[in-house]
Image 1 (cartoon, rainbow, N blue to C red):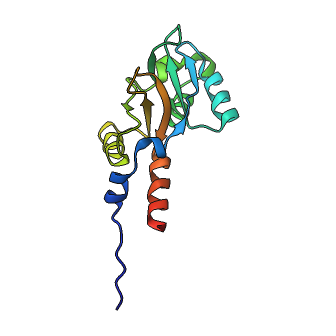
Image 2 (cartoon, one colour):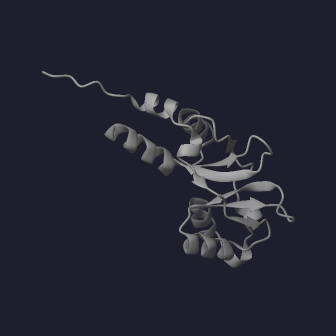
Image 3 (spheres, rainbow, N blue to C red):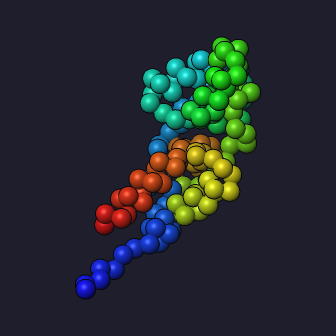
Length: 144
């Protein structure tokens, strides 16, 4: 039997920096945006989360995911709910030079499917990393 060396999933994740798997840029909305507007934004841009910012759009309040949106829709009309009231706070952040292994650990610890990727220089959001991005990296690594 011929054995082919394989790379373990943890080794794959330990070698890939977040910046190589994340989605560049973020979509944001203010805390007072109605959830119906957030739903429209998610649908129009085909994204699974939106960053919720404070009134002057300078600091992050939290992240609202598609799952948060679905849960809120089961409670009452989306026009009657705000992004700030439904966002997961605080947003869980990671730097672009951290490994996907660290990202996966943080996602597990915080029970979240999205991490906000922030610049180490100024702490401003530069992208989003999702569990799907990590899964894609695992699949790509397994094919190598």
